[in-house]
Length: 444
Image 1 (tube, rainbow, N blue to C red):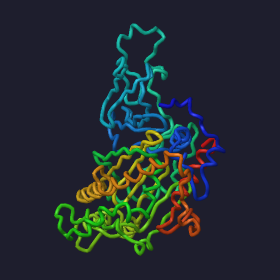
Image 2: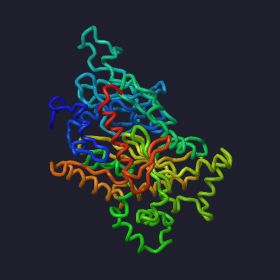
Image 3: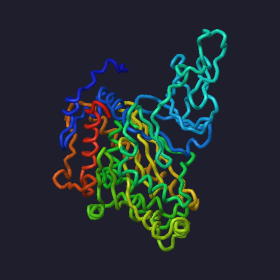
Image 4: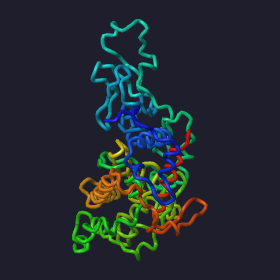
């Protein structure tokens, strides 16, 4: 393993040399020194999503995740406040918690049994009399290290290692719209995360996943192995999911004609989304769809007909909140990509329950998630195979440049950012422009 201090961290000029208007050097994906710089200047300085408030509803609830190069615990303290703590004992540096989520009123170090409260303060140490008289349980130096900068937007918790960050809303920009839309779809005005989630780790760089989420060109080719069986399967054959799985698999077989209605949107800061995809299927309301009718009636009863039409009329897919969050509001889905190493990425995929909506809406969301993003998914497993093949190729010296030129001459700009048709690689170019800006900035 390469120690961080042994890496030759690239300079700003080095980074600029990796990005051309329509090409990116393979080092951006394969160089451990570049990855370390990303951990410092992207995942350390930007506002990074760490948890949802519904995961830490009561004192003692916690979630384990990562922030920059640190493993952290997001906790709810006895005072009801949310904390983000580095998962490390201040005594000898041991990792404290080895599970991803749960409830515990105390965290005990397995090495020497220092015990901490959910807010990170030191509660007790064994054999207190053996410590010097100056040893103080209340001294912050003996507490778990607390991340000071935490902000929440409509239940979504973000944190940063940056000691002087711009407000969270500055970072989110127009992407607050998709968070608003997800929450506003709940008749009671709140969403809560499902109790479980899918987790997949792949052998590839984190940026590959974020690029793939904005790539509408690949499904017809990569997912052909699932499209063909779906075309042969008889319609209305499944009582369990009302043909939902079949229709979703068929949707990946659209051709050039279907691309015409899809628009890609690239925003400042690396954010992106696409519109008018998956416009058909059982998740789209039909005249005979009693579940959707009941749900719509519940929403109308709370916010009125006009506001309901506005909320349900937003049709955006794979809303990418740079650098690592992907939200699909109409399907109550969210993906979080967590970089582990230059060639290892953890992807966690969640479902949200719309409070006040029929339970069947959540069941449909779970089926959508299972079909699209589970480890056994015929769709996501195809994607993972491609991401790992890309990493294998990019780890070699041959062919150093990655081509992102498709659509380069036809993209257009509006007041909010860049626009393009479905075939363009504009979102990837937008992501790398943000990547370049973040890595070459001396301060965020």
